[in-house]
Each structure stands twice: as structure tokens, then as C-alpha cells.
Amino acid sequence: MQIRVFLRAVAVCLGLVGSSFAQSAASPEGAITSIVRVFLAPNYDTDWSGLEKLPGIKWAPLPPKMLDNCLPDGGCFTRAGTANLGGQNLSVLATGARTIVTHVYLRNGGAAIGEPRVVAALKQAGFSEELARCPVPGTIGGTNWYRLKSAGSGPGFIAIQSSCNGKPCEGFTLTMGTDLPALQPNQLKLYSEQCSANASERKAVSTSSPQEGVAQTIAAYIPQASGPAFYDWKALAGLVPNAEWIPGGPKKYNPEPYPYTQSGNMKLAQRAFSLVATGTQTQVKTIGLEENGMHPKGEDVLGLLRGQGLDVKLVRCGPIYTESTNNWYSLTSSKTHPAMLKQSIRFEGKQAQDAYELRLDSTLPKGDPRDRNPGVNGCR
Image (cartoon, rainbow, N blue to C red; front, top):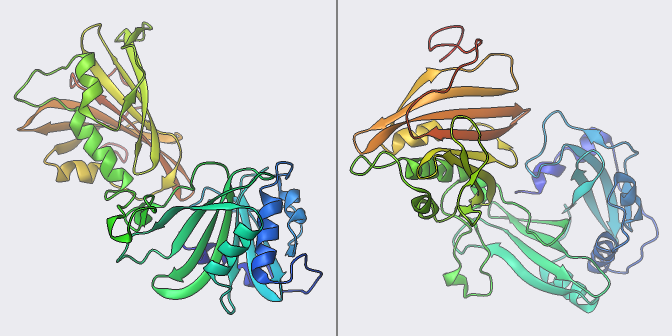
């Protein structure tokens, strides 16, 4: 994501200005290295007060600011600051949850410090820096992610941005842990995680968006008209390569109306989902797909299903004034057996979380008395 999005209004909103104070490093790159070392120290306190330990940064007073809408990095709280690093002024923003900081962004609006200088300083300080994510050649991707390791520090990453939509800029992002921060859907085609290969051989993280992956997965689980209306549990495992079903086949748990269940998980363009299938001892009858996190609202999985040749018709709406929409749709085409699909979407500000239930027997479950028919009380 463009770090600039998070920092654009920091100074205006909080009235913070740069101040000069004692520095632990003589150069900007040395000062950044000092911040990294403290941030990744095993005893570093990840709550909002722990930010005070990061050298060279002056922070806005606590508590952190709670946002009406969470940021794309998942942070719903922010704390802004300013830094004077080796004589260079930077804007700073920390983001995270109510009790924990997950990201620290530094934006340099002055003369560029330079990625090579920062990487060299980290190496000199004892960090091994592995280029873990990099731009795909020919795209507007302008950030490199380095996986950092050292004997006295925990694992983490520094992202160094040198281009904003093709124009020079400079920013740094610090995160902890062994997993690369998730990309936004519009970034998946811009970056590769095969950075040791020749630049011309770098493949994008994904050439499709998560919502395209969801639509493709649902379509793949609908039996073809040329075959039986239901498939067995062995066939289920091979229908979608990304799906990882728990080994051992289905287990009998006696849920209604089908007693056998098998669980799994999958990732679609870096977005994680839980899977659950139910059925009889020999046949799969329903498949559930539930997003583990949240994403920016506005996606249209149903439209993408229509684009794959399926006729998608609303047949039932769930109760109004509930946490999630729970609407049922019929899915039909000349090439597939008919099926029913429930789409449940939970909204939280500008974020959304999707869940789907595909019924291969093309029946509707028993409804809630508050359910609505199409055209009634806003059901459309």
C-alpha cells in the first residue's frame, strides 16, 4: 500500500512539528537502524506506550486515536509522531489494535536517504537482510520488503518505498513476525515473492484478485451437468488445488441435516478462508467458505459468478437489522447442476467479511420467520 495514505494528514490533524533532540546515531540510516533494533528487540513492549522507547521519535500524547474506519493494514487505532534522524525530519505514524502496535510508518519528505544506505547500515549492524518481496518489472510497484534477522532480535520486516506511482518518494515500514504483511488486492499483480530470480523471471504474487478466487472456487464446486449431481469425499479433495482439507476424510458429528463433516482451509490471493463440507457417508451435500479476516467493502462476487455463465437469482433475504446479510441465491446454467448459495456479509465501517454456503441439492434450509421474499420489505 502507499505509505503516504496513512501519513498525508498527520501534521495537519495533530499539529505536530519536528523538534531536534539528542540522537543515538550520527546519520539518518544509522538512526533508522537504531529504531529497527529497538523495535525488534525480544523485550520490546508492543503496546502503545512502548513506542516511547523508539529513539529519535516524538509521539503525540496517549491514548492512541480511534478511527471511525479501520485502515487497509487492519489498524483501527493510530498514534502520530515526528522524528529527527541524523538531522533529517520524518513524519511517523504507528497503527494497530486497541492494545497492540502492528505497524510503524516513517515518511521522508526531504532529500532521499537512499535504500542502499539503509540496507548497508542494517547489514553493518548485524542484520541479515533477505529481499522477500519486490516489484514485478514493468509495473508501478515501488517498494522492497526485507526480512530481517539477527542474533539479538526477533524476526521482522522493513519495507522501503522509493517510488509512489512512478514518482520519487521515500518511506519505511516496520513490522514484526515471520509472515510478510498482506498486500491489498490492487497490489497483487505489482509484486513478486520470487526475488532471488532474474528480474525478468519474477512472477506476481497473484494475477487474480481474492474475489475472483472466491467466485472461481464456488463455480468449481458446482457439479457439471454431464456428470452426477453429487460427488464423493475423495473427489472433493481434488476439485480446487488451493483447498487443504484435513486428512482422514469426513467425521461423523451428527449435524442436521447431514451427519458427516470435513474441515479445511485455503488462501486465495493471500486472503485466508476456512472451509467446511457436510454430507452423507458417501456424498458431499454442502460446502462452506468463510473469510478469516476482513477486506475493503465493495466487492461483487455474485457479478463475477454471472460472468462465468451462471444465472444468479435472489430467492430469499435474511432478517433485517442483523449483524450480517444472509441472502440466498439460485445458481443455474446449462453446463452445471442447479445449486443454492447463501451469501453472508458482515460490515464494519468500510470493511467487510464474507461467508458462503453452497448447497448442492439445490434446496433451501428451513427459514427464519423474519426472512423476506424478493420484492418484500427491501429484499432485492
